[in-house]
Image 1 (cartoon, rainbow, N blue to C red):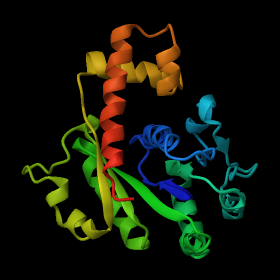
Image 2 (tube, rainbow, N blue to C red; image 1 turned 135 degrees about the vertical axis):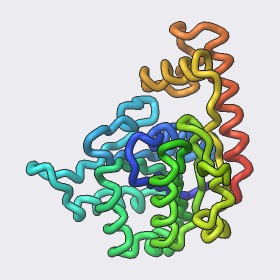
Image 3 (cartoon, helix red, strand yellow; image 1 turned 45 degrees about the vertical axis):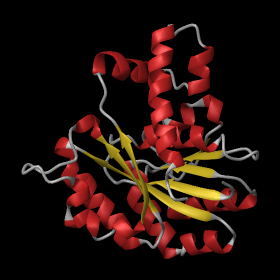
Amino acid sequence: MQNTVHFILQGKGGIGKTLVSTILAQWLAQKDDKPLRCFDTDQENPTFSRYKAMNVKHVPVMTDTRTIDPKRFDALMIDILEEDGNCVIDNGANSFTPLMAYLLENDCFAMLEEAGRKVYIHTIVGGGDTLHDTATGFAATAKATHVPLVLWENEHFGRLASPSGKLFTESQTYLEHAARVRGRVVLTARNPDTFGADIKKMNMGRLTLDEVRASDRFNVMEKQRIKVVFRDLFEQLDKVNW
């Protein structure tokens, strides 16, 4: 996989965009000899940029008056086009609307494709109380663009199903755009006292899988459970129709 650009886009905050960015980045790093380039456009919670091992570049799009200047996204696009290689762009809820407006107004998806980049949008739909808002965000993003989609189903908030039991992937909202979905990745809700606690410990330390493996802060069983989670997610990513 070479010269791909991956935007993680979902207007709802706290749904797992940075988690998806870190997982995707670690998977992509194995797929190309060229250095992976990562960007964080979140202005309020630039968590992705705190993963030092990934060398994430923070894109400062906020002005001194705490407003977002869309023209500052120019720096992001120039960086993406400047060098070959795969790119991951994490985006916060606060910059979702201006970034989408910028990408559409400037026809950035077509520009990237014309420059030889394959562009993908990764969008997250959560279960439970987050389902309605995130499903609406999925539909809005799909309608606004022609870009291939990768759906991440986050089960940590509950099942992705309506009160009547209808799965999101059976809903009209999903089926209208299913042809555009190149693949689905499920963030499975595992035992919160073991798997959940271990992943939280890793995320709080802003660590990659390789760093966990080399760390003496994790015991052998914690490392094993984190390895199981990543193996599952990487296998799902391998099956996406890139």
